[in-house]
Length: 368
Ligand SMILES: Cc1cc2nc3c(=O)[nH]c(=O)nc-3n(C[C@H](O)[C@H](O)[C@H](O)COP(=O)(O)O)c2cc1C
Image 1 (cartoon, rainbow, N blue to C red):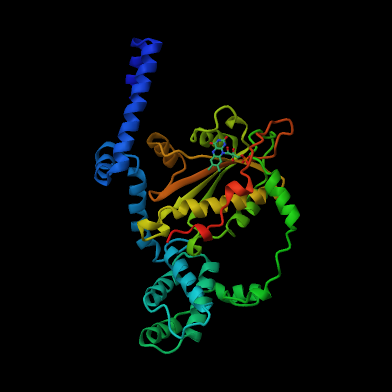
Image 2: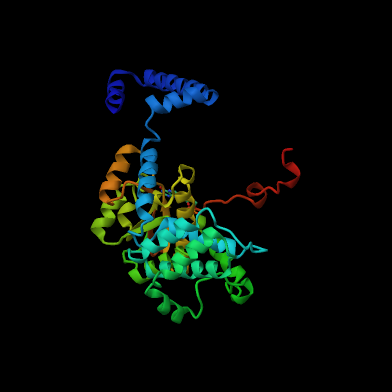
């Protein structure tokens, strides 16, 4: 394609090139209209003429495969178990709480928990799973399916971390009443100030961001909500000049200023968190929510940042997965450059939407 473009540039006059561009965009528009009007044509197009979704489809399939392995507790997080425990938590907080629930997944949950006991799952995750399962079996009524699993659970050893966790926390990791937590003490005006004053900063001082600051921000980022509390992401951090230079070459939107980045972060989504293709977009939502908390946490610590787009382009995807050693189910959500703002560096004003353009109360306009 590029060679054809080069050839056309050499052979054609400026006028002819402009006409050619015009015809191409008309042809593209015509093609789009055809595709927009026919599901069959769309399928045909994406099956035979466009590979735009190939990499995503491959990652989704690999994610499903790895999800099966993951639920045996072979990694520090068990995504199936996390979701199952979260579903139990939701059952436990129900008003009124049902005497019997989780019949369709409790057996799989206990099995996955049992396998994780001798696996690599993080101690805190195992303590949480233990406490919620214990609470479930303590409070549910007798039922053949539940009784069988209760027996199996009671026969299991407790996770080694549990006593330590109880000592530290004072209570189990079980649902609590909202009134027992202190109310949020962040001053509303201070938060509004941070929201209004934060801007993407692209010019940084030539000094590193200490790792304890980055770690603090990541710890806060992972407090963000995520679908069924699965937290399907990793933060890859590059803060030595050689790695930063290499990583900064991957995305497109940083030309002209990437060589002053003190550190680059890649937020990577893990599709093995899901057994269903329908959830393939959740990595971007959960990753985006965590990214915003990360950015705000950095702001409170005096560190500026700029989110950086990751384009789904085959050559770049290949280069990124090689350089970052990504697993086959991992997709880049975004990059973020971070550093201390250079005081003389310019920052775009970036006008925001007015309230009335950003929101609509829909009650009166609902169809039907
Ligand atoms: C997903 C995403 C991708 C972005 N990609 C780039 C990028 O590639 N290069 C860049 O300079 N800025 C990038 N930005 C920063 C936006 O340009 C910036 O957030 C926007 O203009 C609003 O400005 P503000 O962040 O200062 O409020 C990106 C932001 C987001 C959220």
